[in-house]
Image (cartoon, rainbow, N blue to C red; front, side, top):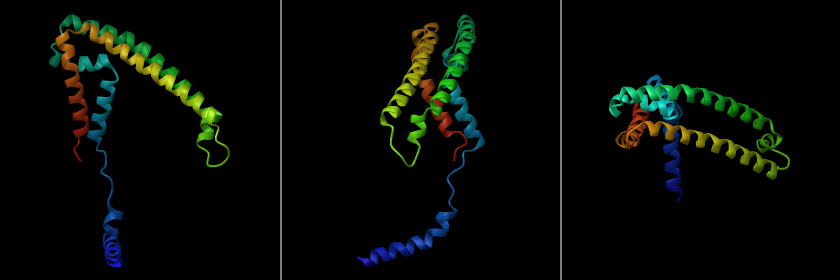
Length: 166
């Protein structure tokens, strides 16, 4: 029994300098830019569809409609983001959330549950708003174009994952 432990200890001591020098792979600027771009596109249905206008063979009328919709959604999206930031700041200041991060004292379980419920409600509102935005964009597209979207979406995510290859 001691022989395997001894061998393992010797192996760990021998490898320690190599392990300590090992660094996690860095995110290259190219990968970071690709991830940011993919995230931006996936979070903006209008921009996503316009980005893939050639692949989707959008008509001039569709492009115009999407650009108009994009302007309208940009305003509502900015308002939603401002509300979300405001609510997040307010919630971060709540004693229940601060209590959750403490190392000593009593756990305010009811307060934490209420704060978590409020966060969930805010998150649900934004998910619903995003789903509505997607439906508005989808209504402008043909069934064939809508059928292409999942593949384009997967392609965008895979491209982001491969960008800058480490």
